[in-house]
Image (cartoon, rainbow, N blue to C red; front, side):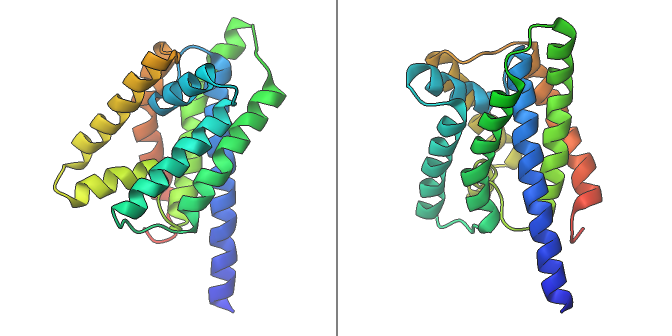
Amino acid sequence: MLSSKNSVARSLRLAIGLLLFGFGLGLVIMGDFGLPPWDVLHKGLAEQTPISIGVAMILIGVLLLAVLIFMKEPMGIGTIANVAFIGLILDATLAIGGEPTNLAIRSICTITGPIIVGLGSGFYIGARFGPGPRDGLMTALGRRGVTLWKARTCIEGSALIAGLILGGTVGWGTIWFVLAIGPSVQFFLRRLDVNP
């Protein structure tokens, strides 16, 4: 019975985490002062095709899943849920929130977005149902001898460059996201990890 309750609680944490993660990314995009590196790629792909930014995120996630399977990396239900739902939540957030024109509202969206993504990450990663495909790629390279910071820097840099080539948006919001996301994830994960 305790095990069943624990599983339900962890599933709820996963769902809350994915919801907050997609919502936080949506806020950054609504702010329109620059996107996180991966979302520069997602938006660039959306700009070049008839698909939405959320669908672009899902398609790239599926491609990364294939890479992780090829690399024989461990995955879980959280990995699949990340790919399936965050893009949809992002698109829903953008559909509801629209395109604010007020400078103060846009700034608040940009500033709070990565903190909410960090909170979502604390719930989602802390539920321990498997990493997202982008995190899985980093850890896959880490298992093959690349230090994690080098792996993450190369992955994020590659996504950013590809997104710029496709026409994605970069600005002070990009820099803020890069600076804020690490400390936010660390702060919330320490408090929300089911098995610290």
